[in-house]
Image (cartoon, rainbow, N blue to C red; front, top):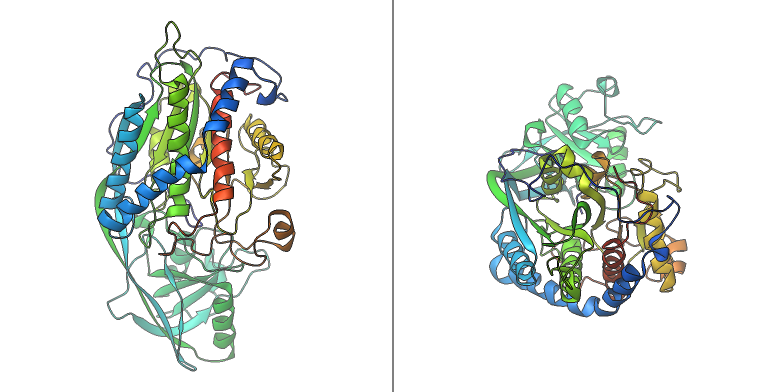
Length: 507
C-alpha cells in the first residue's frame, strides 16, 4: 500500500495497452440484467456453481506457495526487497507472468519508464536542548540534504483549527523560517504542497509530523515537486519537538538522502483468451514492495491471492477458448501492478493508456492490497459512502461490489467494516475513470480500536501491521486466517462475475 499521498504518472514511454485491440467497437449490453439493488447471490446458476467450486478450491494453502516464491526472490535475488525497478521486482514479474501463461492466460508485460528511488539516509538528531535521536522517514522523491545532514534551528508552523496547517503562505507569516527547519503538522493538503510552501517561506528542510498515532511516511508524488529535503515523524515526536520549539531554541541535524534514477518497470496483465470482451471483469493487486523489505503482507499477499485465484479459475475451464465446451462467460483480466509504492504509477499508466472504448468495456475493478495483516481488520471499500467519511462514494455500481463482499464474508461468519476510498491504492485511477470499484484490505499502520478488537480479536491500540514498510514484513508477518478469507473473496467474485454482472451499470 502506498504511503499517504497519491502520485501521478511520470515519464510515459510504454508499450501498447494489453486491452482488446479493437478500439472502435461499441460495448454490448451486459449478459445479465437486474436492478441496481440486486447482488450476485441471486445470479445465474452457472455463476453460483462456479463460485462455490472456486471458493472450495482456492485458499491460503495454494496462495502460500506464491508467497514463499516471492520471499525467496527477495532474499536471494532481490537484495532483500522487490521494489519497482529492482532485480527483485523484475524476477517477481517474470515468475507471475510465467505461471499465468502456463495456465493458459494471454499475458502482457506492460513496460514504462519511471524514476526509481532508493533511501540512502534518514536520520534526525536533536542537538539542543538535550541530544536525542528521533525516528524519521524520507518522503519519496524528496530533495536530499548534504551527506552528514543539515543542521539548523526549528520553527513550528502554528496549527490551524481547520486542519490545513502549513498549506498556504499565510501559515508561515507569524514565524521566522529563513534558513530554518519547518516543523509542520500533517493534514489539509499534500506533502508536496506543504514542503513547497515551507520552501517559499525560506525553510531549508521540512519535517512533517503525523496528526494521528503512528509513524509517518509519504511521497512528494513526482521528483519535479521536490523543493527542499522532506521527512515524516510520528505525532508523539512531532508534538514533543513543537513544545520544545515554542519554549525556546531547538537545533536539530537532519540527514535525508535519496538516490533517484530513470528505470523501466512492467505491469503484468493476464486475461482469458475467450470470454465477452465487451464485459471485462478485472481484479488487481500491486506486486512491488518498498525498498526496506520483502513486502510479504504489502503486497505479496494480494499478488499471491490473485495468482492462486487465476490458477484455480483456469483449472475450472476459464482459459478454454470459446467453442464446444469452452468458456463463454465475461472476459476476466488479472493485473499485477508495478510502482504502486512510489505513487500508483503502474495502475495510473494502465488506465491512461486505455481508449474511451476500452474503458467502457471494463465492467468492474476489485483491488486487494494488504490482505493478511497480523493484527488484522476486515475492511471493505465503502462504495456507497454509507460511513460518511473521507472522499465520498465510488462510481455507480461500487455500492453493489461492496455489498457482495460484505455478504460473502458474513456468510462465512466474518463481520466486515467499511473503509474509505482514501486514494492510497490502485483503485484510484479506476475510480477517476468512472469504473465501478471495490475490494478488501486488512489494514496498515493505523491502530486497531477497542471495538475492532472485540469484533476481530488481536490487540487494541496497536497497528494492524506493525511491520508496515519495514524489513520485518516477511513470511512471519501474516495472519493466515485473514489471508484465507480474502483469497476466497477473490475466488467468489471471479466465479460470480464471470457469468453474471448483476445490477452493475453498463454503457
